[in-house]
Image (tube, rainbow, N blue to C red; front, side, top):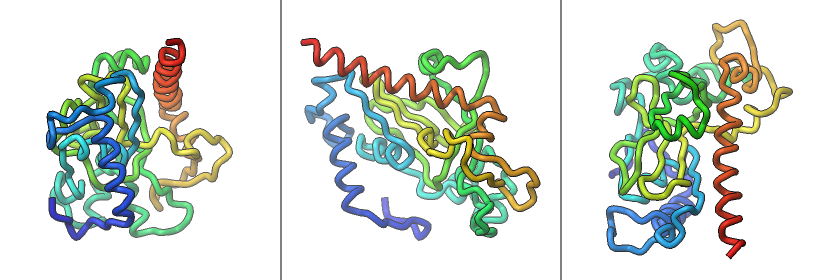
Amino acid sequence: QKTRLTVGIKTPNRHLFELSFLFHLLGGNQNSGFNNFLEEKPNYPVMGICLGMQTMNVATGGDMYQDIPSDIYGLKYVEDVITLGNDQMHRNYNKHLYPEAEINNHSFHYVKIIDKELRKKLKLKNEFNPMVASSHHQAVKNLGKDIIVAATSMDGKVIEMLIHKKYPNVIAPQFHPEFIYLHDPDSKKRKFSPDEKEMLTEHEILIKNNSYQFHLDFWELYITSVKTFEKSNTSR
């Protein structure tokens, strides 16, 4: 893909290294005969978050929407993106117009976990959809080799999580379960837009929307996969 005017490349060497690293781990359509590392250790845990998820998809032969507002929603202006509503805003575009410190940097929106097996592992009941924090303007378009969509935005237009067809401990969320302020009840209170009166910490936002437990369960799932893999390899 050629580079769009909406895209800035700040650390090219990092990107090239991570693309190569993930290709060597997972393989890809660009060289289907390559003997990648996880063919030997299929239970090896791999996680990619946000850019890491996008890099995983490109490394395995997929590609990207380079700008969500223009490519997916056909919008060019910040004011128009803001009218979409929270579930279609994947970073807080209010920050572009109102750079004041009390405006939150992140967008909080719901996601649909559509993979049934993953829903069971994450202990999601009935039709519950968790709220997450995002900060990105690009999205996965065409999938890489053996990559599966595990979650989407509420309108189904933006891919929110990837897993792997062959390797059960590969998981990659587009959102940020690791943001430190999500887990800190004493962090600074902020608001999403200048019109909001209520100011909350990011932790309070998740608690208020019954979504903090989802984040704990997400990390429990991944940590369990790491411990299980470590135990199986040290006991030999």
